[in-house]
Amino acid sequence: MTNTEPRRRNRRGEGGKLREEIITAALALLDEGGDERAVTLRSVARKAGIAAPSIYPHFADQPSIMLAVVQQEMDALAATLREADDKADRDGRSRLFAVCNAYLDFAQVHPQRYRIMFGGMWTPSVEDTSITDADLDSLGVEAFTLLVGVLGACVEEGIAHASDDLFGDAVALWLGLHGLAHQRAVVRKMPGPADVGDRLIKALAHLK
Image 1 (cartoon, rainbow, N blue to C red):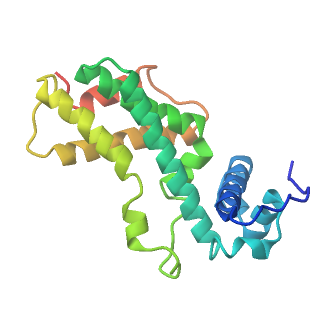
Image 2 (image 1 turned 180 degrees about the vertical axis):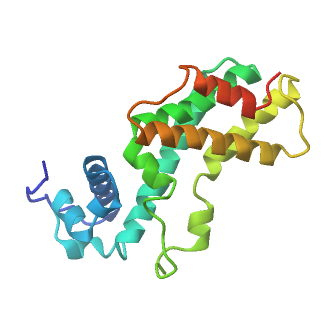
Image 3 (image 1 turned 120 degrees about the vertical axis):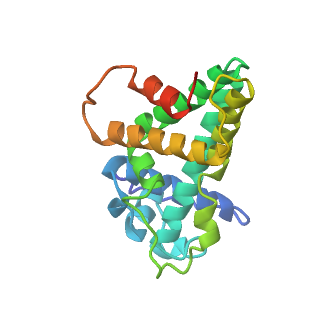
């Protein structure tokens, strides 16, 4: 149900709180509507219980709201992977499977958000001057760096075939995970064996 109740005005100096509420409203619309077409300035304002002009001190336009949503969810993904890594046994294999399966689980729990995070449904155009190349280049870096680290640990422990291009191997692993995650997010019933995720991780990480 759409929130139409008037919102209590923030006190002076609480502009950051309103920005967070705008992002939360956009996320709620995504979860309800499934894609970025549900997120307009008017719908976000209605969901947050504010007037549409109140958005402009915080976001120039709809794409800048979407960027903030994607940045927040990328941070959430990185936090999820870090937590999985911290809880795993300290051997490389356990860390690798924990991180990769946490990635797959994140996409399965939040399919609408995942589709937005990784393009396809939201891609900034060249006209979106409020979004810089630096903004886009930074998306997902923390999560990817963690994946490189756990894959490197497997190589150092001798349980994965060494490569002269660890970065490239991590990219291949990430793309494989993304492909499986995307299929799970858009297909009602996945074909294949139940352990297809573990098979994918083992193959793309070149585990011995």
